[in-house]
Amino acid sequence: MGGCGAPGSAADGRGEGGSLWWLGVLLSVVSSILSNLGVNTQKLSLMREAAKPAAQGRPYAKQPLWELGLLLVIVGSLGDFAALGFAAQSLVTPVGAVTMVANLFFASLWLGEHLSASDVGATSLILVGAVLAAAFADKSEQCYTLDELVGLYGRPPFLVYAAGVVLVSLFFYFLSRRCEMLKEKHGADSREYCRYKKIHPFCYALLSGMLGAQSVLFAKSTAELFEESVSGEFQFHKPVSW
Image (cartoon, rainbow, N blue to C red):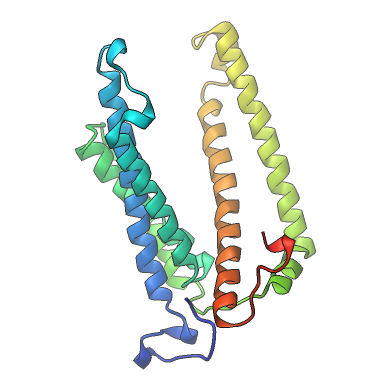
């Protein structure tokens, strides 16, 4: 898949360190656009269903447009996974921010959502940050065996990081549950809920980002195992790999 094996050169199309990192970047860009198109397609389907009388509403499984969106999301996710096999996680993940630009396009021109100057400015800053991160990211590729990955996961810095992720996730999970309870009990305009009104949606965004980051980390590890299994020794012979 990626850069396992002998280092190549620019002449053979493999880039720095024998890695097809440029293919990983291309896959990540296309996959991000497809995933965002899928999400917006699903939202369009839900908006159309919401505009119908309640008696004519259909469940997700009976909405062809929603199912098409789900298919696009799945294809995009598989493409993201494949991209991790060709390039470093520190390169693929920032490039995935192109989904923000795609979302501006689809949401405003397709779904009719209002696009403010702050939306454009914030997205532009994210895009600039992604470009800078990708430009200076490590474009070499290393292959890890299962034993090497287990060793890396057992290092003290990662254990501290993992503990921090768990604690922060639990804190914001229970905070979001409290927000939901106050909103349901006292109402969305109540004084009790207004104290948490701004932090409530932030809890969901933070939890999604935290858990999503771990999925990318484990997807990259899985891609490494696939890569090593193809080019070297089979790596799925131990329970820990699964």
